[in-house]
Length: 228
Image (tube, rainbow, N blue to C red; front, side):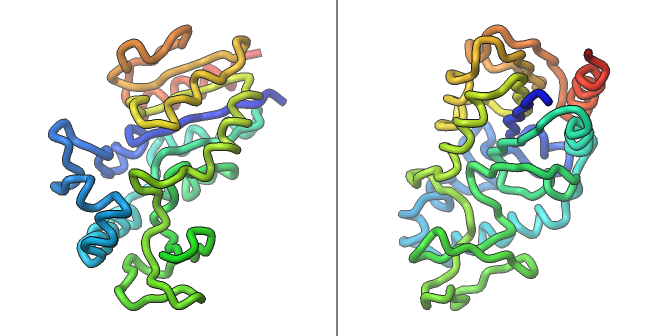
């Protein structure tokens, strides 16, 4: 069974009503990302950061997987599929995909402010100030902020080294270390890109489907399932 690796970004969740990470003015849902998505912001104003992610989590829980998420599940019929996602939503899981690596964490979990390895599944949409981990430390969103290590990048690198097929969906390829995964793909790997806006000078030897994920991904999945 061929190994197929998908790298997904915000574009795949856009048609589920979740905004892309950063607008052209550098804001995320009206906030400067450095005021809500850095360790410094958390230490400076934890109430604001907690409020911001509680609002994002509510939006994620209200969203539903779209045709692109569901189409990827079908690939498991024929391929050894792993999805590496930069998204912090759980739409791949809810669509039914069985192997997912979240590079930037998962907003439906909380983690200890003291030990990031202590994570907890959440009930509901809010982490409250005063909610503590087993060590007595404040719980925070289970997301990787700017300036923090990306612990899941190592297993992602190994997967990409062994990939027979690699698909990029809905990402600008500007955020590292995720964008660097393209540099370690085997030369023999077949590479595909689905995005309405093809990143300039970022992709070489890719078969490009210049379309939104909700229509482009089902088209590509159909092609791959029909391939010999």
